[in-house]
Image 1 (cartoon, rainbow, N blue to C red):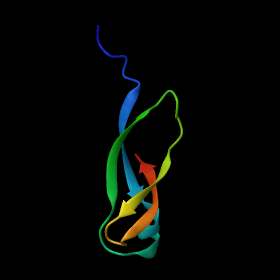
Image 2: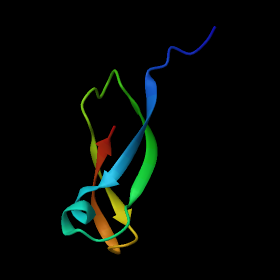
Image 3: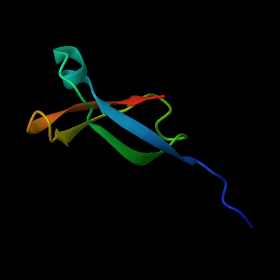
Image 4: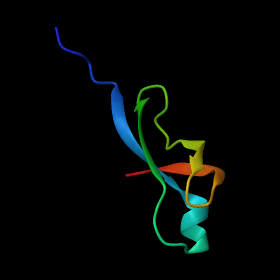
Length: 60
């Protein structure tokens, strides 16, 4: 029997860096359960360009 496929792969992108207009992007790839969290998620992750923890939002 195969898996049901509730977990999907998502990309998280830094929103603070996007607002500041600096070059480059900070992105993370992770998975989420689309049944438990149908909305887009926001997590605090480390941004190596800004050298601090920032909010990363799910992008499509």
